[in-house]
Length: 208
Image 1: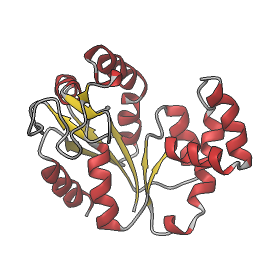
Image 2: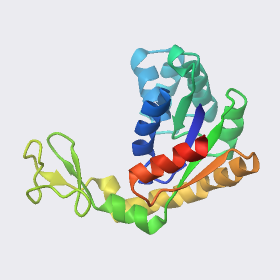
Image 3: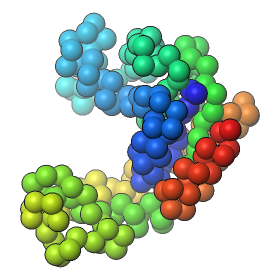
């Protein structure tokens, strides 16, 4: 099962990916993680990527594709994989199509206002990094972490202005991929405003 996960920040890609990993016994491949690993291990691709990352520039598409191609040769990808965070653009999708045949592209559909509500309500523990939500996952004691008692705060990227900016980028860059993959009859549309377990059940049903 070779899958791509598409969805706005806060659509629930990470939650769904964890369940799909267990169900199909395939790895989740995050381009961010792959880049950091390549840099840490000092591979040829990692050294090239580091020069871009250090200067704050985007790593060129071809270099990301080279790193993904290398990763797909590893044993754990034999039965398939879940690509998360890639492709983000049509150019990247074209390049990916030249190195891997994907079975399905899962599109997690969620309204912008729902994403803003989900993410702006998140609170993170300064000490241990545990995540809470002011409505959906309240801490037992306001402003304090249940696990370690650390102070809870709102990360900069969970502030409304930042979330809306990220959504604008997603809508401009990544939404065209939905049309691109629907034309190839690879798209699986999911209502990501449901409970996570319902999203997973619907996903498995549509994949089978």
